[in-house]
Image 1: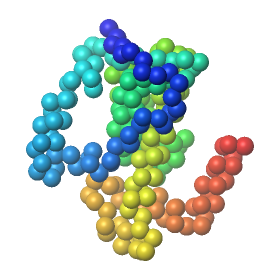
Image 2 (image 1 turned 45 degrees about the vertical axis):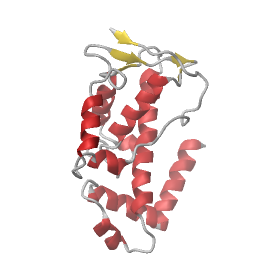
Image 3 (image 1 turned 180 degrees about the horizontal axis):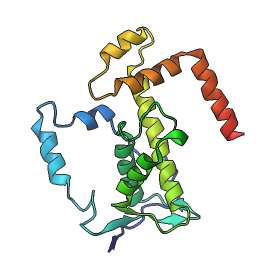
Image 4 (image 1 turned 60 degrees about the vertical axis):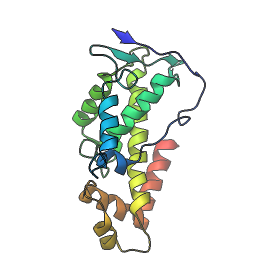
Length: 194
């Protein structure tokens, strides 16, 4: 059985109406002793607005092989953002095209448990692209937040919270700070987008 929701709009952009979750708050929710967040999260956990009933899935609608941006697309964005932030599954220091296919398949299977994207021949590709985009956004947000240019790399590493996988962060931090890393990024962009 499939759950659908009415369209709110079918012409918005990919970034419209997407509120990027605060990674730290997502990972630390309930850890600071604040039981209110935990209770709210538990109350909403199985709510049909956030999760379909058992045995059902939200249907992702497509128009011209692009995802229609409605309330289901918003739920898909949130689910993809949650999965993209699991750095043990999708490490930040491995480029997307070099990620272990088993891990990408696991992430896509997790999404497919709640979302039906079979309405388009490009369904898998569109969801994978969205996951890739949110994964990049997640690790870039971490780098932007903790990469204090006034501190040495060692000092930055000491300031990181426990939920960040330090080896991955260190590789990305060194890459971002090094001129060679910038050249590598620019070559990648030139190679893939020309």
